[in-house]
Length: 297
Image (cartoon, rainbow, N blue to C red; front, side, top):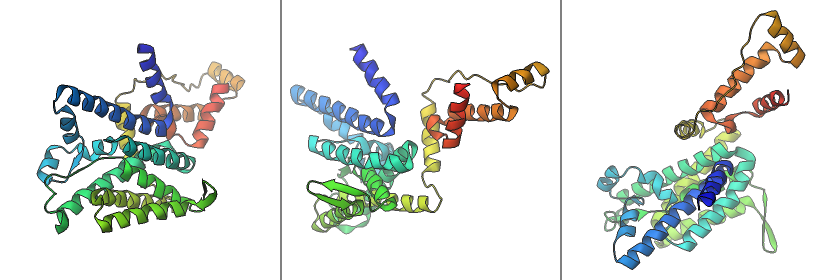
């Protein structure tokens, strides 16, 4: 059992941002599933208790006592088909997203899309009269807002990317438009209006994120930096080999033999410190190439 758990932890660490998001969602779903089974067998309300403290409530008084639900709700699913289709969309959109934006932006876009979608959901339920009778008891759950942000971002950035659907090939923008129209129709018919509001909020962030990126601005950078610092709190400090520059002739001869200049060594030190602060994924292509060059020496 320990071996299986060790393999899961290793896969989580080395699997990349997309696999990590999917694994967290699956892990929370398994926890809820176990609690629901226990609730049924022992006739206790532990599963309902779990939902109350992880789903996003619309009642502002309740929300003030559970601010973490702005994040926890986007990893909570109650039914198999709910999580199945969300993870299917996440895997499909996430693979394309990684090709253009990378892992750090994937996680940041998922979380920021979920946060903005959750905020629009809470705002809508407290603003529109149609929700007056249910605002005190409603809550939201699911990865849809974050997933929608990823789908719309990649569709905005590369709208003509071909997607094979059975016997037809359609551009990615067609998939995005279909998803948006589905939410708008659902909202107009009053079918899951809360979910539709959250989806539209996530979609809006995905659109503006991609548009800003094409103009040379990264809307996720500040948030991604916060995530990096938080993640680094749980990482052991790497044992880095410090390279010292020295002016004595012995070191100069050594640098000459290895083909390394003092400037190269200083750049290496900067790269190593950046890895310590923000992780390997934060390096640019030039920095990774420089690190690879030193690894071969």
